[in-house]
Image 1 (cartoon, helix red, strand yellow):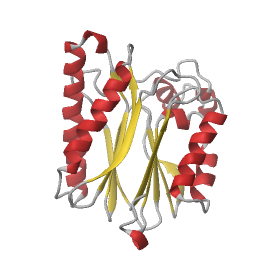
Image 2: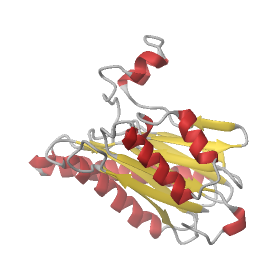
Image 3: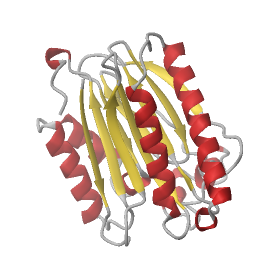
Image 4: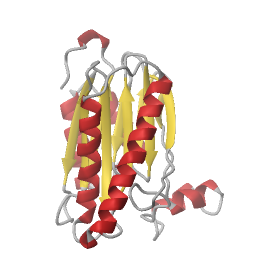
Length: 251
């Protein structure tokens, strides 16, 4: 398994409220996370960083994730606990009132990948069947598309594109989507915040992920393209590649 992580402030924002990374547990399995924080007074970066650091600590002390049920249960329990931590923190720190974060998290093993998400940070997969988005955005605009009220083309430029219907830490209870897929040699997962997905098309993502560059070069190219196309938001991504030929080669 190989992983790379990149985050960039972008060209407009005064600071970076995204967090992300990829971490290894005691069994050698990977956890990849992208979290896009929101809230005034820099509370967004508090929410995303608390989410990342807490889940990283728990994951690195975890073992025994052998089945899809194990992975799904771990993600569900961990994300619910983090939600409670964020919600309590925002209530006890007035400067963090209303803070929250998106999250997309993937447990990747040698047999499967389990994906959980809340908000509009995304996970895509490139495999033998092509390139597709695995997650569903929990946003107002996506709900309008899903119910046939606007087209996907209209959604790209909708004035309320950034309105989320779900986020981590903003409510006492949280609902997430979780699914497990087969993950096989040569497959790639791309996790990203909307700073990437709003600025780089799926056809551009596919072209970059399929080229012969290293994972580091692919990540650098994706960040550069998002910035070249405006860079109005923070940009964060993790690429996870299943590489059976080089199991020790974690980039």
